[in-house]
Image 1 (cartoon, helix red, strand yellow):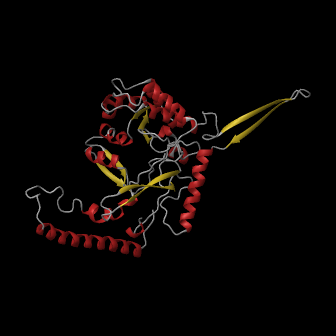
Image 2 (cartoon, rainbow, N blue to C red):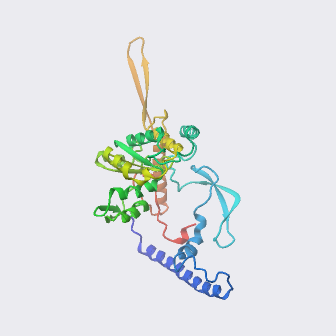
Image 3 (cartoon, rainbow, N blue to C red):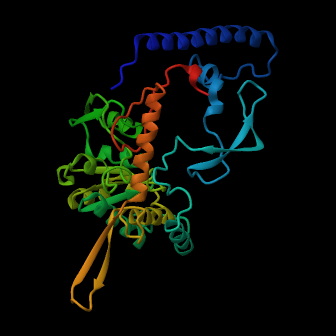
Length: 378
């Protein structure tokens, strides 16, 4: 855990305090101007009261051009960003015809599957033609196809659990399942920085919550571990010792949705009680095929060396001495090796430049930097 220097913390609080003070002063004079001017909105209730939208109006709008930037190309390592302009101090942004080619350093596209892929894309296209874009139904009605069953089998095998259940949205994987597993009288020991999907539903469950200092990971599946099987593989934890495993498909696999993996009894119970399975739309068939194909690449089942380590055996037969020779070549898993090399290089260079890097794990899928001052944003 990084400890922020006292001077940095002091100047950061001061800068935010200054922005808050000037924002309040601005609002004070704005009320007089609005009162002075004739308005046809008299007797209408205000949309926001007090400080409800203060942060957006006085802080966020100053730097909103840094966020939500539209792109005009696939979200690959390099992509085209549409430039925008503002004529009202960043209140509104208008797109232009100019495009900038940029390197994507803030992407969840860890292994590059979000862009066109030589193995995945043709299979996803074929699935779209066969099944269409949606099942238009829940899993318990007409939303379960052979593809969904295959996906759950593939995921269960990949994470090392007997069975799995998939949902069409990663957020729902947590928010719809937690209330089914834990209720009033239960105990939830939660990471202090857990995702909103966990934090909100934990509070809504009625269970007692105890928080520990942040040390978890959220998106490791597919990206870390010797064969990309996540935190358990990286840390040498037997998946049999973990009762319930949850993960998302939106990062390493270039798709959508999430999964819960565990015992047969657990998954059967969830399929009878979880609202995400009973009432929500099943995962899109092309999205399901994307996940299956991506896992096959990671495992090396696509016949290439882009994913899992595998061996090529050359067989030689010596007619004279009647001896057999076997040569085994261990081809390195290109995608997994590349993300580790890129990550380690990027982290070391940031540290050389004086940045505070939150993650220091070898081979971690992503790095986070502390940028305390608002002036450094943009």
